[in-house]
Image 1: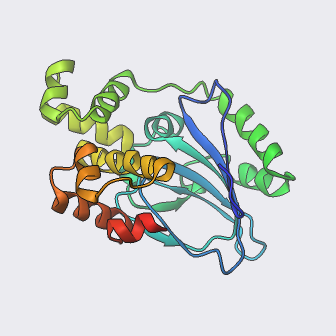
Image 2: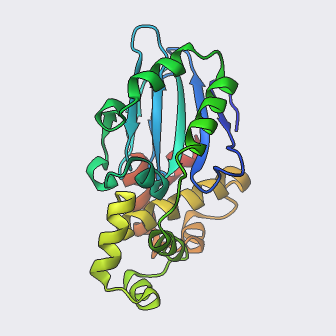
Length: 239
């Protein structure tokens, strides 16, 4: 994905189960302020601006926020992969941004490398090599829960399929992803809708489209979009 100020790069096949993408931004001051919406991902973000260089971890999001970073490079992880990488329950970072020095022993070296390397290609090569050495794994139980949630199964149904209690399903998923199952489904439903509208546009009314993406009714549809974007469906998708 590429625009005037934002570019995404796919990871290698080896990292695809763990890394959603690498991305960079090089906006001007006028382009810098924008709303970031929840996406069931987490990011390690390096601000490369001369007067505000820092590296931070943006945890699982349940609500939108406004950002104003101009020149940045970042690694976007799938939720359960970042748990294995840092060995810290992601529930401790929900809706938070923390300095990577809080949990990465070599954070100073990593930050210096991001600053000294010239261009996105070399930064991506660094992270490809760095992450390959970490022997990343996804927790099988969490992955199974995630797949079933994406298929709109309820927590009770998932518990029955995996022989877990509803409390166990919630506890395992929250620890490894930082989100409860209901919130994960809410965000995933919205992101599925967002990708569809970006590709095909809204070819019917919102009521019909909401029904196709498993919203109970128009009120549920409008409420979820507003809570995740601060806008009405018409206002958000028109932009």
